[in-house]
Image (cartoon, rainbow, N blue to C red; front, side):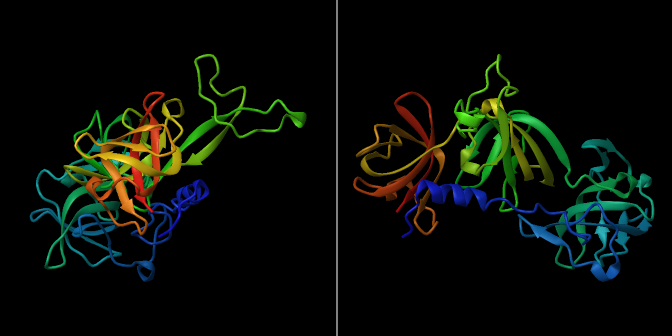
Length: 320
């Protein structure tokens, strides 16, 4: 099994950097360019398996049957009554009616792929001026709950479950102190923002985080696509600097495991570990485990944040 050093943790975080969809010249992945038919692949599928989305020009409109066809893709789209139709510009949605759609509109379609190959739309986004923002929603809120193992979370101001995937970018601008040494070199030591010091006296670095760096209560700016009325697929998460706490990483043998109270202790580290209910519990190959799979004497890689001077909230634990 692999032996995860702190350096390995940082490398794994760095590998999360990915080009988020909608950045190439295909109608599926780009909302900022006009593709030719020869460039057009099929639709982009995502979770759940029959949830699809694409961006293309409206070719025909059947007002009686509420059907749309497109120049770049072959799928016929049915727009049911009640399906949201909006124009999005600078992240602001303006509701439209089906009658407002025009042949030639450059639109983003989100919907469910049916067995006959057609699509039942659950949202139509009209791209103002032929340019879409690349996401359906942008909002700022505080994280309410997190299920690290499932890759999902909720926020206080919305009812949907928010899902991340391998393309979700999680980042924030973290302030750093200057070294007082010769040449005023930067020592790379994180500093906590205060009311008196908002980072203007130091320097800040855009930092990529992993999902397990996030904690309930963090204030975040989220860009997301609508999957359905209960689910959003997150494109990016920006952590507001002042809420961020440095993750604590270490490897140690378990001294005790209390599954009922979800509490663990370690042979060397003095932390009392509180394993959150949604913690990512894995073996060295990345397969999911339960807390019952851990026992005294297991060598583990642990990640969490300090709740008190003695207590660590564990969001990820790997059995090595």
